[in-house]
Length: 300
Image (cartoon, rainbow, N blue to C red):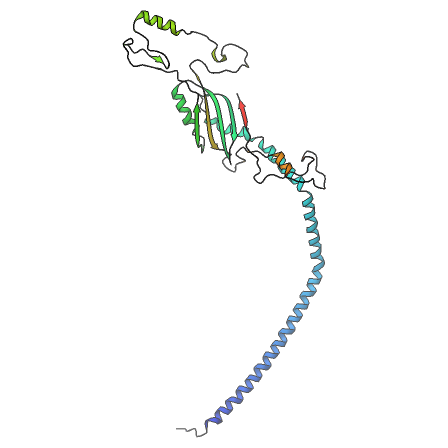
């Protein structure tokens, strides 16, 4: 068994001396590290400054070229606008034929079309108006169903049909047989004498009558409605996007050259090549690239 008979301050004094020595060594090491880092930072800064000074002329040259490019682009704004306007106007030339080709497969064969016209609406919507000839009420009903097959058609309206179908009227004291008549005719009496007087009073013609321009006149004469046919006008509203994949045409609204030229401001300093713009300067396309509604038509 060992006993430590030395007072406690003896051991504490030794530990204090070691702590002082370690602190001095840490201070010296930190000071050396600080001096080394400061020296390295100054050397790196000097190297970067030298590199920046070396690259400065090249950077200034790039900035000068970019500024010159902006100047050139700014002077060519008129030409670019004129070219864009010309491209849009040329492309729009095919919009109406494309719409007629788009709608024709949905027009039934029993409906003889005499004229087609179309007007652009808001956005890509269009209103197609057809005028043609039908005979029976069933064809009149089927025409609506056929035109509703146009993709995304929102409405179909019709007008002008006059039925020529016969029907059996209600029996009367003078007509106990129920002979078929047309709309607007009076019942045919059973008495032979009264029936003869009835037909004499009603009158009428038989055979060729020249109705509708058929059978006479030059070949260029427009053919109208044949006997017992009606002139029917239908209007269809639908969005026009053609073709369905990556559409080239969305609606029928066309570029407005007048508004474009008026909104372009003064003429640019550079000359505009012939055929790309008017003397008033560079046209700018409207924000939507279109103007207000126009109208086109086609006649058989």
